[in-house]
Length: 207
Ligand SMILES: C[S@@+](CC[C@H](N)C(=O)[O-])C[C@H]1O[C@@H](n2cnc3c(N)ncnc32)[C@H](O)[C@@H]1O
Image 1 (cartoon, protein in one colour):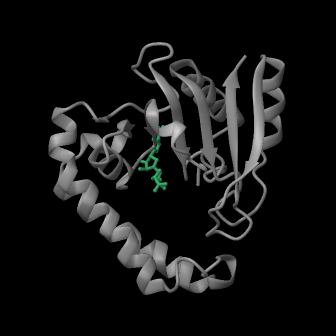
Image 2 (cartoon, protein in one colour):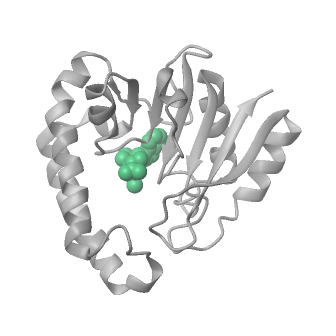
């Protein structure tokens, strides 16, 4: 999703809106330095499991009704998708108690992050901005990306489409505004594509 390379993993990484995913657990096990933040982390492991399992029923039913909106060459099948999603959640939940103790999971919610300026080298945000274009305003998107840029050298956001694969109405205004404020903004193609057409990330750096 983020075309991450070996040099990217040498610095400190912040994952915003990280959710019940296994990125932090897997990266930490490989010796990388990752902090994940999400308002979800104020709930207990049991509460998170129940809510993710419930939400995945709706999500998978939705995918099943719209299979042609997705690219299946890597994911394979709906069963495999369920297995991957719930497997990632299991890995995350196993890691959560230790990660909370070590300060690797934090409750921060965009657009306000409780970190110092430049504390990270790379900030990531997947499946939150642009995807939920109906929920969040252009102003929210702009504030969230500027906040990620405040705390990190580079910010990457994936995907750039709305939940139905439609162009996000926020994308062009956000890019224009960021450039006007002096940020360098690039749309970059990435190797990952599950929602058809969602194969680009936004890479933003402070000049
Ligand atoms: C669809 S999930 C994406 C999780 C993960 N990034 C992934 O790609 O699998 C969206 C996540 O954004 C979190 N979220 C919602 N509002 C947020 C906010 N204001 N700041 C940070 N995270 C938020 C939700 O709790 C949820 O875990």
